[in-house]
Image (cartoon, rainbow, N blue to C red; front, side, top):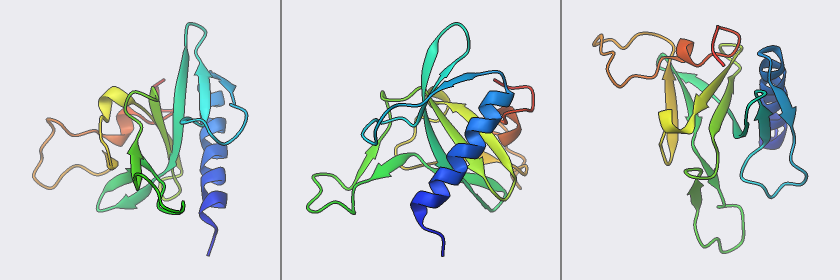
Length: 141
């Protein structure tokens, strides 16, 4: 079984490549204690990015929208959301081989987020985040 840190590093590298291919300049913070993994520069502004590994489940890419502190001894809180601390989630999904850039205001969630890869069975479109709208290299940035 692959260590979670190695899995996260692999996703971050895939995201960095996709962001670079999409025309962003990248900055990497020093150390492990920042609430974001990357900073992207689009030539106009800098934005904080939290990288996540997504999993394809029931036609959607599911990703964690919080960090876990359960592994710390006596954590004051077990999970912590990123609201107000990042500008984007960047998600790499190994099953789709794609990276997605989601503005935090499009996914103001506290535990997990999702992007639909397949249309919902009930044909709902309102309030549904479609993966294609956020895919890096698919005309979005």
